[in-house]
Amino acid sequence: MAARSSLSQQQQQQKTPAIVPEIVWERQRLDYSSDVGVWVPAEFDLVNRIAAYTSCNCGDIGQNIADVVPARLLNKPHLWISDWEVDYSLPHCDEERWVYASSHVDFGKLEEPHVHREEAVKGGELSRTAKKTERSDAMSQERVVRRRCLIRKRRIDGSDLSWFLELLDCRVLNELEEDRAQYEDFIAQICRQRAGISTNIVR
Image (cartoon, rainbow, N blue to C red; front, top):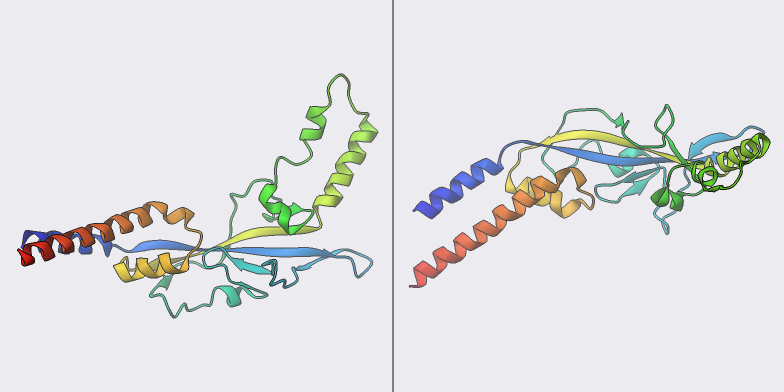
């Protein structure tokens, strides 16, 4: 009886509503088909998993944000509590929060831009002209593609089913690590309690 009461309390605690972020990368490339370079959505590349929009939660890609995160997620009970917003916390971004690189594969290895080469020069200084040329070349090389992070938040009811669906669907859960650990501990405790009850019945 005490075990069932404890289990009921655990279940009630897990039903506390929680906020889940949907995180999407928006990608663009520089198009030189006209006289002036214009930023356009990234081309769809299924093999390399590159598209205009990429969901960090489930890994879906598409040319519209609704392709990767529908307005209504039919497999998840939830309530949207915000619109899509640009993430302002990314390092090395411009005023519109774009981060630039020479190719999409370079985004994973971005470091401090333009600084290391000058700091590495010892025993003398580069001329001002050389420095300016170097910075211009580096800038032109790094501004071929760009991406920024978009976030939209939704509320889930905190039930074990809701968390199970999140864990089943999500690949990136950086902001849910603590909640996920609590959920996994909760499931493990249920299994132990059920095993104990079964043992008592057998006896």
